[in-house]
Length: 415
Image (tube, rainbow, N blue to C red):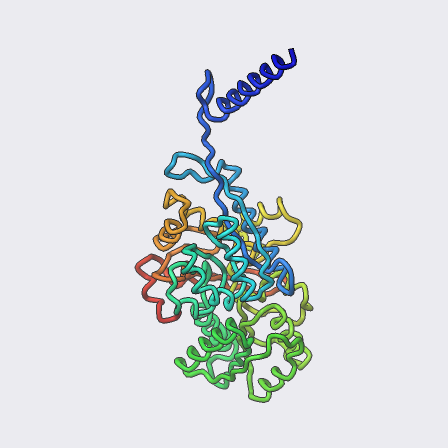
């Protein structure tokens, strides 16, 4: 009897498994074939911990929001006829170049990531040149150093105006503001105060070249990015006769420059900075009077309701998160959406097919601008001009360097 019961249970188990398989894959009366394929893995390497953790949180939240939208709609349909959900894997690189190489390799080789979003810094991105060629996986991020373009790496893409374009736009903005205030460029001397890392030095060179080409007097200095007090740098610039300013740096540098300028008695100055000035975590470290009326290039502002895509993103973000959305959140949302677009265009989640599809994207509308891929690296040629009003970044203008794919080659000299 015991033997019979054991056999009977075994038979019943087989039938139960068969029934489950029929329900999942069709083959039974009323059954439907499964439409869900294997998940697609996206990898994010960013600063989960450390000084830049707030930016890393924004990056992860932005990518997650985009991926959730895709998954809730059923996933990505590939050429196999199945819908594939996206799984996001996140690694903490702490902003370190060496560790970043490890996190990217782990995401690709162990987690199976077919595209990488991140890292946070330009120096990290440049250091990944050989690694991404070896892995054959596309990387999309917000890095802006013009040195990325020089690598001509078909796997490195920055979905943001680079320092070359930003420098030209900011250089022109500071000169135009001076002329509007004083009637001409007579007496102008622009202080170029940037960090001494890859981001700062690359931007400083662009500023310098722009002012040289346009006959504008300037003073250039690069500060130690590890120093919190930049009073000495501002004092030297004042002694050199600077009366308006441009700067590209990271969060600590932006705060230190603003504080030092205010403490040195500089008021109502014409100041334009890189997008760091519009980030929520940076403005939270400021006093309103330090930066009132300062301008910066910015890809996104939570207060901007003129752009329907931007306004919709802000609405969705606030429904999902308690922190205020800022530039990095918007950017990584767009990075993830761009990766999805490439996979849809390719009809495949094979890494090389994704990389090839990114290089062919043209005219794809995102909340930070229209994507036009060039031969290597560049995807976005549009940037907003934001002014700080009582510590709130207010988008007041937008500058686009191209209007079609044909225009892309005309801005190559700025990269």
